[in-house]
Amino acid sequence: MYKEILRSIENIEIYPIISLLIFVTFFVGMFIWVVRVPKGYVDYMKSLPMDEQESTHTQP
Image 1 (cartoon, rainbow, N blue to C red):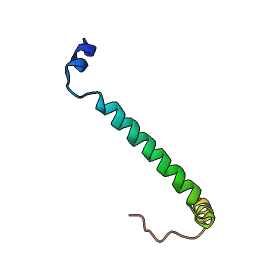
Image 2: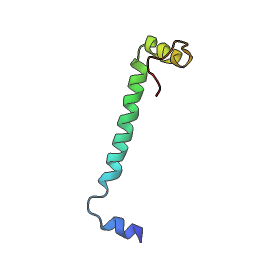
Image 3: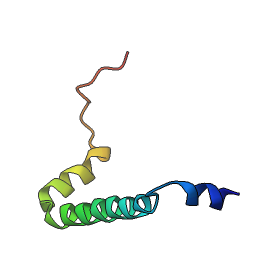
């Protein structure tokens, strides 16, 4: 039943292609960002959870 409904929709074959392109583009972009990010930024972000300084944000 579902196969017949999907077959009746015109141009539905483009949606898996678009989804794959979005998926691949996102992960290629993330890979490029990970390779190019400065090591100092990674070390700074790594040390944030263990930072003993008080936060500048106040809690209500």
